[in-house]
Length: 86
Image (tube, rainbow, N blue to C red):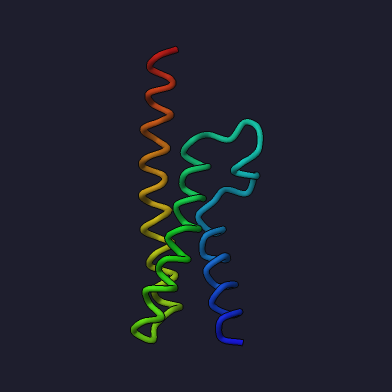
C-alpha cells in the first residue's frame, strides 16, 4: 500500500510541473517536454533515494522539483538554440 501511495504521489508531483496540455503532443516546446521528463525521472529517483532514509515521499517531491527545474533549463536552452538558427 505504501509503495502504491509513493508512486501515485511521485506521478502527481511530476504532473504538477507540466502544463495542462500534453507535453509530448504536437506543438509542445522542448521546455515543456524536458521539464515533464525531468520531473518524472527526478520524482522516481527521489523516491528511491528517500526510501533509504525512510522519507520516500519527501524524496519524491524534492526529486521532482529539482528534475523539473533542471529539465526546464535544458529545454529552454534547446528552444533558444532552435530559434537562433532559424
